[in-house]
Image (cartoon, rainbow, N blue to C red; front, top):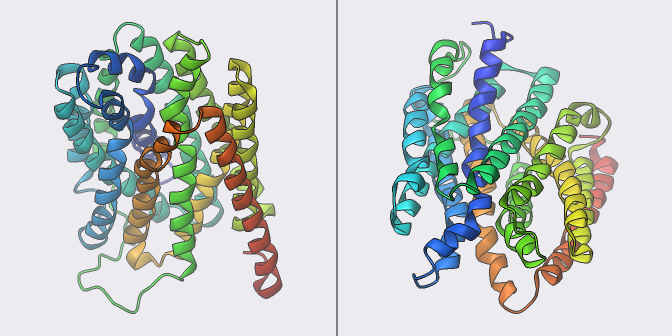
Amino acid sequence: MNTESWQVKVALLLVSSLTIMSMITISASLPDMTKTFSTLPNAENLVKLTLSFPALFIALTAIIAGKFIDKFGRLRLLNAALIIYAIAGSTGYWLDNIYLILAGRALLGICVGITMTIATTLIADYYQGKSRQKFAGLQIAVMSLGGILFVTLGGVLADISWRVPFLLYLFPLLILPMTSLYLKEPKTLHVVKNKDASVKSPNVIWLVFVNVMIMWILFFIIPVQIPFYLKSIGIEKNTLIGIAIASTTFFSVISSLSFSKIKDKLSFQQVFGIGYLLMALAFASISYGGSYGMVMIGMLLSGLGMGLMIPNANVWVMQLAPEQIRGQEIGRLTTFWFMGQFLSPILLLPFLNIISHSQLFLILTYIILGLSISFFIYSMLNKKTSGKT
């Protein structure tokens, strides 16, 4: 197997793109979907939950999937997960019951937990050193480009009907032939039949996990609340809402493609510090702006920040995790990633009952700025003891 072949790389990147599309594709549909189910108690929160609900099941599934693939191999689950992904993801088009749609979103989350863990673990298996660093940045760039495509299409299709964007979830059926033909089990894979308890990752890996969860709790307020915020300031076209959300992923492409060069000059901690600083500026722009133009500036800055921080977390975990438990640790990373997305509306939406959107974004600005300063301090302290990571 030639891991440098374009077929292998494209297959890995297409599977990776399913992660971001699973969440934000239907963002622009939420306001109209809320109207459809308005007769139900707590309809607005139920509809918003459809966006974040998959994240809970991704989080619950990923760590189990990680342990399973360490024991039995990477590819046994992948193709089945792609088929079920397509069926579960498209349920919003076919079903009229919000609770059944939520059940479909849950099953979608289980499939994403499997596909993302396998794709990221295979990248760590197939590539090393500089090649791994570059591919991790490319992975996030392609995920972001997929996000641009699917969320923009979602916005356009939502102007036809809020149901139509759910058909985009049939996309994995087009990927299935490539994964079947070109992805193979790594020849160097040490399948762990009896786990050696002495094989452990450094404790700092838990800092990365917890930070990834916090990062997504803060960032995921954008796809959940920006559609409603834009409606509140007079932006009615779903296409414009879709473009605003897609612009975040567009600018994350720029920074993620630059990640490898930036990482060559900075430590993991410094990259997180810069990423959080960009996000703080983004949230300040949204808070003080009150216009579509200022929201777009916020989308630009938040995209640049997240485009650095996501591959930074992935590569740090790949570097820290021993090969024998690599799938398990990447599964944990995926679990914390999507637990943050699931917890985001649960933790942040209640504040909107007592404060405005602008006030919430302002409070989050100061929290994120504090995180940025903390990572810069951590980097300086780390350099004094061990040099650049």
